[in-house]
Image 1 (cartoon, helix red, strand yellow):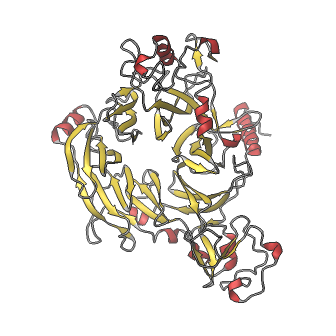
Image 2 (image 1 turned 90 degrees about the horizontal axis):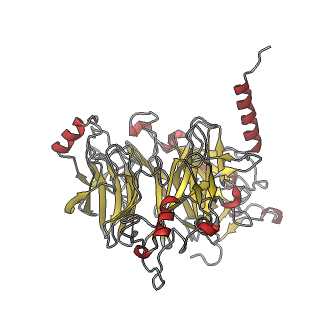
Image 3 (image 1 turned 120 degrees about the vertical axis):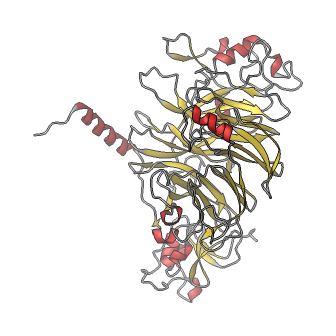
Length: 600
């Protein structure tokens, strides 16, 4: 009889424990045929259909401003009018080429970089004062410039991209404007050793994080940044320093800085943040032993849902763990309160990390914002004792818990990793439904209906509505894992479409495919898709917000017990087909007939 080794037995036990503790993961209500998606419009970098595109695009960033889409690629910036789609392709109306000069390319090659690396990859693409602010890697010598939004003409001179844009196109970075200042998170050097959160280009003085201090940063991967209240919050993952393990452990973090920070005194933290603090994000499945999703990949903007300001985030497990992804929600008030809690410290390199006793924390409280009219109305005037403390104690003791202490969505033991997200909080004919779209490492899109619990914390009855292929190899070119890497996922609310950016193309996909159920009322109702409803024309129609069409849908339950089976023809039961009335016992949770009062 074959005997199993101890490591294999341990792995089997772990799989059994995890699988028994995880919530059930039903498949989608609808799997969309590939041929449906392959008819959707694609941007390939052409001005018109007769034009040929030779070089690959190497798309890096996309930015939607009103009805215009800007696409930053390698050496090129494109302007695409979203309302001027011709058939199955989107064409650009303007294109601007911004290539590295021969000298920068030559120096880049001399330093050992490949020809493809010594190009100008657009890594920062922001809207600024009616125009665009753009930064590119510029052959490992980053540059930034302002451009007009209509003609894509450069305005003024270029400025250094150091600390604003990475040198290497493969490195992650984030950037946003807030109160006239540019806040960036990237690396500042050719070797990508010096990670930084940096403020520049505004009326406030330039500030940065401390150089080469592993307590502040340890190999961070920056994901997103948001403005909330008096702070900017940066979401990232990094190597943990607080665990006494031999192997490296990656954890997810959020750091914050005060927008009003003016830097420290001439003795401590001069030209550096006095308000930089960071805390761990906890996305895990509770149990006797928590199962953690430690790798942060993407976050939503701040959403106002059910009376709370929340942020959703996509996490995954490490590649050498049980494969899985999760979506966790974090309440911004709860998140901010963690930064008012205890600090964490390591008293010596050999000791474990422990909380700092309250009586040892100097006053005013380290990491706070200076308050006008108070004794310390500027961070320049903070006492040295306080500045030294925040310099050596940037980590909070408590981790930030997810809403409801568990993920909103979990997908495990699948061949893909969820890594992008976008949320529609105004879905459906009454604009009162929340639909979450998740992008995977294979280029697929998963669509979920978020159904809140009574306490509005952690929905555990979310509905997996659809799964569909997002990548179109017939139009986008090669079909490889690299080509299928989803760079960004954007919701165009006006046209009710998703914009999927891949390295070689941008694919535009409607948020719903109601026409697939158009011949069968039962399929239309059971789809539970808030965008779709059975209408007077005896068809499954897309329902725009405030529609005045009579419609029927049951998003909450998908109850079709009163309907016959689909046979390719219209089924009985529709109130618009002079069929028998629907029994009252089946009407709970339905949106029947006309829109609710208050909709236009």
